[in-house]
Image (cartoon, rainbow, N blue to C red; front, top):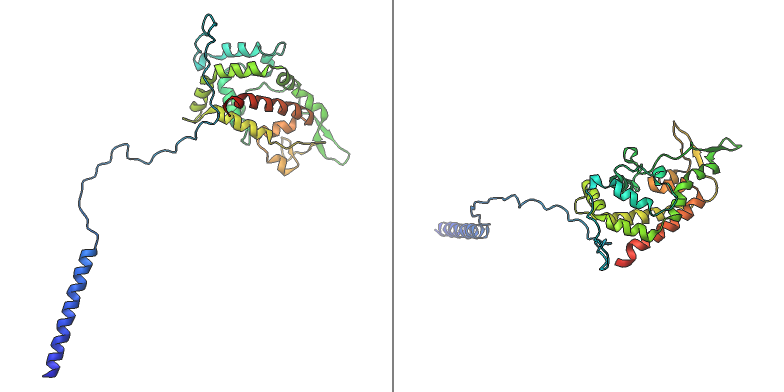
Amino acid sequence: MKNVILVSVIITVSVYIFLVIKKNRESSAPQYIEQAVTLSPKQTVPEPQPPPVKYPVPPVEPEPEQTPAPEPLPALDESDHALFTGLVALSGDIQWQELFLPAALVRRFVVTVDNMTADKLPRKYRFAQPLPGSFQIQKNGDDKLSIAMENHARYGGYVRLAESVDLNRLVALYRRYYPLFQQAYEELGYPGRYFNDRLIAVIDHLLAAPEIKGSIELKQPKVYYVFADPELEALSAGQKVLVRIGPDNAVRVTARLRELRELLTVTYN
């Protein structure tokens, strides 16, 4: 009899425990409520926001006494003649047409600037005319190759232009035509990005190029010559230009780049 009573108690307690555990599980389980959900086109992953503008170019305001007011800017595809005429007026006897390609001037400039930090400059959209003469090399007694000093003279026209142009007037011309540079930059694939910030970043990149003294050794693995020093060969396209033009030319050009950077940013710091 005692065994029967004991078994009954055990069964009763077990059932009670089971019911309590079941109830607790049901009350703690997440409750799902069916709800119709509609996704509108705006409920997509947001695109990354462009970085804030660091160096804004202010719009050109006519002087109070300026009569008549400046003519409106031409369309981007029709701006070559007016912009090229303005550039020629800045440099005296320097022949711009001998140094730069006057067609699609704004677009070529923007593409060239943007690719200065890349491995190569796109030949299809080059901004400058081909250099005069041919690439000059020097063969040393130990059968090593280097850039000949005579090769540096091929860049003379560009260096003289950099030193002779009035940078204040150049920046003023740039400011006037800036909406076209911005348009060309956005059409290049940078909507919402600011071209002047990119220009300053590229100038900083060029100013960081190594200063080379002495001869620069070359090698010719295939058709074209490359720098024998792997660190020089790994430089960007823009920094390689500053190396190839020779140390004296590089000092003169970078000095003007620093002045240009100051004029493009001093007003906004």
